[in-house]
Image 1 (spheres, rainbow, N blue to C red):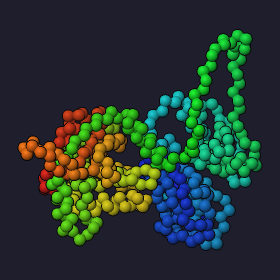
Image 2 (cartoon, helix red, strand yellow; image 1 turned 180 degrees about the horizontal axis):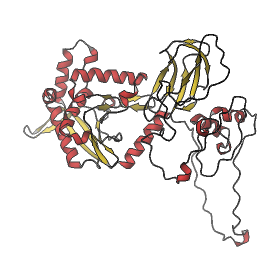
Image 3 (cartoon, rainbow, N blue to C red; image 1 turned 60 degrees about the vertical axis):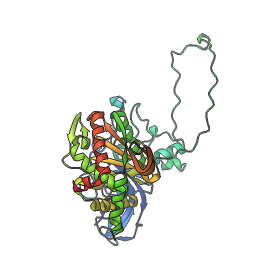
Image 4 (cartoon, rainbow, N blue to C red; image 1 turned 90 degrees about the vertical axis):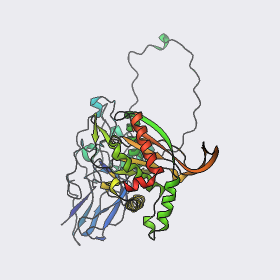
Length: 452
């Protein structure tokens, strides 16, 4: 019996996914749990698995296509079974969970819009068009939002197709590739926007006041436009929202990492397992987690005009991946040893770069650390990861000449600059400074954080 493969929801705020490549071809046998495709979500690239065994009878979308969560992307059937008609799209995801309604599928972190209410109204759902149907041309009413995948928008721009005059056969009237393919192939005349009529009340030519028109300012030649990945779009949207809505406080402090570096050297010298070796970032993660116990406001979130205090400390750390970054977190960070933090961070970072993270490993966390010290960066500021209350930007630990007042001379020390960005809606500069002072004390006397 034929089974539908649907675009899964890999996170609470995912409303669509882009198919990067098929790992199986039509006619190939698949086993339950075997990867059949790689998709790109808002946060990560991930392989999706078959939830039934059989033969990949048909693939319904091509590589590069973006479709909403819950839409059928392939069909798995029994060997020798003939698939005549494409079944209707079901309202459940591949794992059996109910797919979100269109209104609820919008990302929670999407910034508010200034568009009038009628401009935000969704078009009425359009009937599903079969492959042999030609798309009809329809003038979209003024103010309606055109719903189309990034691939469709790119093709429309390349071929000068006015999407406002193309009816979509996808869910809720979404314009998909098959709707504009006949225009791209030249089978149907390309619809273009009608030129705007000149207002009837415009003054006659002889009545217009002649005035000097300034010469146009020379513009640089247009460069290549590149489609942003869903990950990059999400990062941009979230950071724009955060920097616009959260009044950031930035506080920088220098920390003497001499004792911490010596402790790291001693611990790693005793280890036989490379996976347990301690990094500078592991020391910072541990110290931050312990400091958050004393300053729980820094471990809070701003939600619905209220400060939400978290019951546990889950520290995120930023990992650079292709065309973006992702921030997995270590659960109950303050209760873990340095060795446990080291092993967990290495595992999460590796799987983040390989695309093997689970949504529950990055969709959460209570405080974020962004470390660019490995790139030789001395100091930088980071944007708060909403709805968290703060983020810590960590620079490189470098040997630096520091003035010793008692010796009346400079002496070399491992110094590291950290910058805390805090949300002024939930805290203030004095509390943020006290938090950094406490973190500084822990890292400059690392036995305190290990004992704590």
